[in-house]
Picture: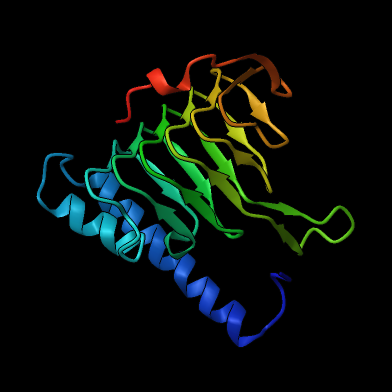
Length: 181
């Protein structure tokens, strides 16, 4: 995606980014117990915000139309979603405070070109505080990502990873014991 290109699709994208910024501002400045919050979240995510899911503001989302959030998802405060490449968060996922989901990066040679790859976080995954997930990564079902990790490649299901870059520490021996939700 060339950010300088004057195409209709870029114009539409820029308007969607502006709309997301305004909605995030409204969410971040509204009483978190207000009845307006669920309406604003549904508007930000174009209805792709699952039942029983919750977000603790502040929240920063580049383009809410490119994010799908499943049921019973818990998102801590100050989460950033650079979502130009699409973010899918399945059911029962936990994202702790200060998580960054970064689907876009700049071309090394032309910094006005965004290179976008999707991020997928599978059912019942848990990302600890301060985790950064880079473009093109899938976090497997039941996976745990330790606080502060930088995830540069896919994480297998039922695996615990941590570090910079994130590396496998162990496997979850009995995933059937994990309580959903």
